[in-house]
Length: 100
Image (cartoon, rainbow, N blue to C red; front, side, top):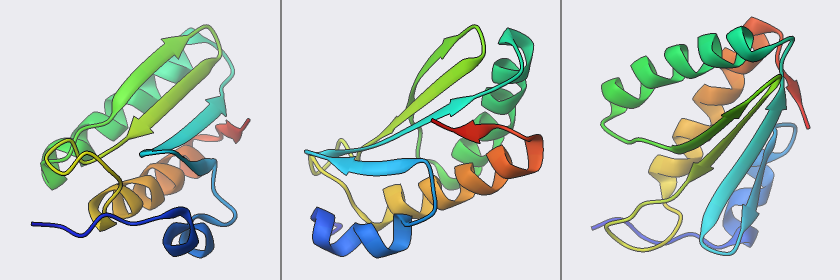
């Protein structure tokens, strides 16, 4: 079982990313050029999520995408969420998405 992390344990790792620790989730939002760019970002994140066997909740809109990360098995944020957030940030940076 994974240990639940609090904001004091995730803030440093998430510094400089789009992600914030809010309650029992990590929330990250990005602006993209258009809807298709948001979907391309989602496609890339889907591959990562499958590789890690850890899947975010996602909201996609025109020029926006939002990721919510939580470890549902422990009802909170774990290192798996932080790791996925950092990987998502790398992909978003590579694709030119901007943190909101």
